[in-house]
Image (cartoon, rainbow, N blue to C red; front, side, top):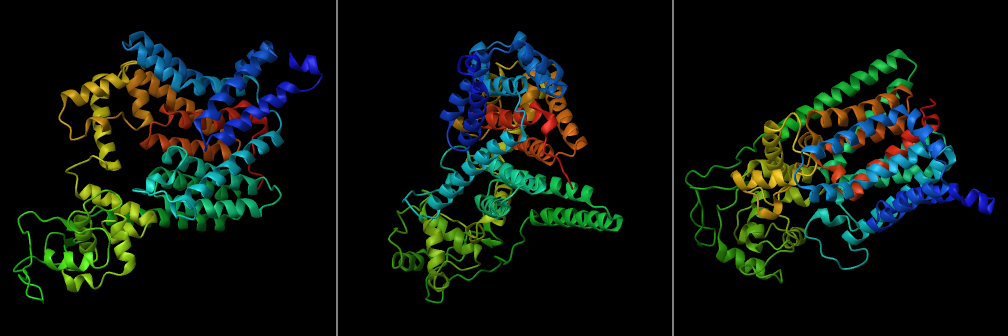
Length: 520
């Protein structure tokens, strides 16, 4: 309509502008996502080329996998009871229904337009990541962080971690497509790899690992010399086996580094040691409540810190004394004046900031692994511990699936079923932490039964197969990132997660003729 009135390609520009708004706003805020989604849909209605839309929807067989999954979700409403929550779920997933629908009915037909949308996404992710790091490291501002997860200022740290890895994938595609200014993606890849390492987000590590595997597979395919392929295969196999062995070894219980048989009873200054031999808590192989002289420790600490030893709390609002005990124990130090002399100014700052172990204070990948190991070694209280909480969520999900494995409970009753489970089963989770599955595969099964799970898997199987068949790196990489995120998150149950999936899926599946492909 507007094209006829103005004589220009107004609808094309609005369509492109809406996609740019989604891509650029995705890492930053929910507001532009809602506005851009409405504009995208309204523009299609105003253009009113319904015959063309229907033809594109009918002939794009790859998109049928998504329509099948959506159909299973809607059919499950026939046996749902809570239509109020079903309406809430529909509203959350509205971008999944609308964005791919519009982008398949009115696809992006030129490769340069894909590049423009991708450029805005890369720019937005870079700016947000730079702001996040600058604030966390106090390059500007004075925000106090009590957890590394607060690193993401504009939305979910988990969803943003996926966007960062997707940014890396787009930069790799930049090289594959042999686009100009390759120094830009090189800088971005280095920055975002460091950001992923620094942020300690398991979803980020997992999706980055999948991206590494996809990159290795495409590299393997592009090699012409058989001996080089075999060498790469052997190297990859050895790396995977070695890393798996190292992970299994790492998560073995830490052996006790000292014995508590006949422990010393007095410090070198003649003060009494407190040593609890009945219920011993260990930190990095050393006992926490052992060789502890609070008289000496309190005096030594209060001489170097403004946070009181007895009444003070660290920056994570934990009792300062307990954090200090654990930190000194992790270093193998006795909790007395002599042991405290080995604490550097950096160690003292770590304790004040709430790091209860020298292993956690190191940051990065190893700190996250150590945190997970500590959770597994101390499973008594799952509250506030992401891995232990998920184990509780998965336990609840398995129980619900076992009772409703065939048809599910209906998309409107998922929340109520979890509430009922927690109310009728023993759980250590606090009421505010009694959440849903945090696994998209389980959630789909619970919602719409076996048919919903099959529809969900079929959706991604056909998309992934088509991407590999055409050797499109970005398609396979995006599918891998999405599938890995579904393992430990309900990615499609939040606005930013569902827009992330909907936007890239819609752009890629809308017009497969312009898929960026491996030209090697």
